[in-house]
Image (tube, rainbow, N blue to C red):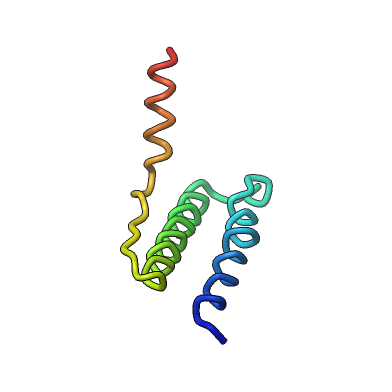
Length: 82
């Protein structure tokens, strides 16, 4: 079996099943804040690893954005809106 095909299937499963399930706030009811933050960081790390591996399979160098960048962008937008 082609390695790229296998990786593409795993990437799709991760993107469409695993991450949405763990990121859904309703699935995190009752979790301590520290656990929620750790899960978010681990998911972000997983995404970054998959993104880099995807690039390597295609002969490219792909680098993920740093963790927390979305929060910074939201804060900037909020500051500009007020």
